[in-house]
Length: 167
Length: 99
Image 1 (tube, rainbow over the protein chains, first blue to last red):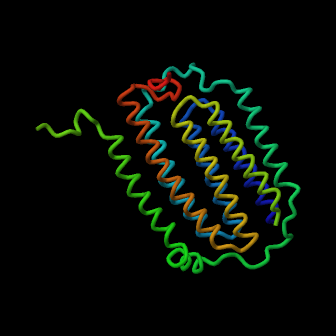
Image 2: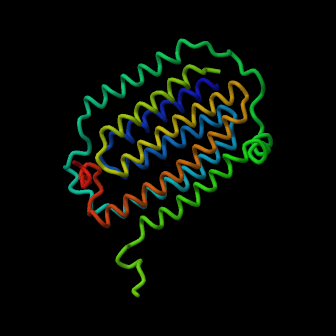
Image 3: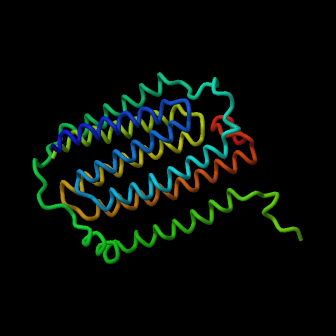
């Protein structure tokens, strides 16, 4: 049962990822990124990380994907004719990606992993407690990064001709 | 627990993301590929959190998702600013700093 779900999710993730990097229409590529993200959320569920699965769906599919689709639509008139080549040098890039995959797989596949997990899945209460006790520093750094990102995004995306107040 | 299979899947996701970064011309296409790479990393973290019952791995998968949100916000703001100032969204046409 679990193997079947794992295989289905793997096919979903891989097919979506191939579409993300090869589809010429960027809007369709963004939608297939949604397929990948949902597949990865399913894998999180399979690995008994329910909270992360729902965070993935909420933040990635709900927020980031919506933002990407908005940006694609806002810049649609600059994308040029659809006949324009969407990529460059696909063959050397495919070779480089395959070589990277071979190196990674060669490094991790010979390793021995425990057949069964040593203990149960991490409960959500433990994750929450750790986030506000031992991992509180990275947690707070993340919130600082959020503030910086919001301020930076507003500063970069604002219209300079209309943003400055006349003196 | 099929650790090797999920590891292979995350490697494939990472390699596909690298392929996308190398081939895409459109700036938003580059961002989509970066999301693939970040997802591969998060998948690895969650896998090892399950195998070794580590709570830190799950916390850092959470941080990866949060950083991905920041990256998307700033990246898309740059794309919007680029479209407004340089009138292009293709990363290879932005060559003002090229020597």
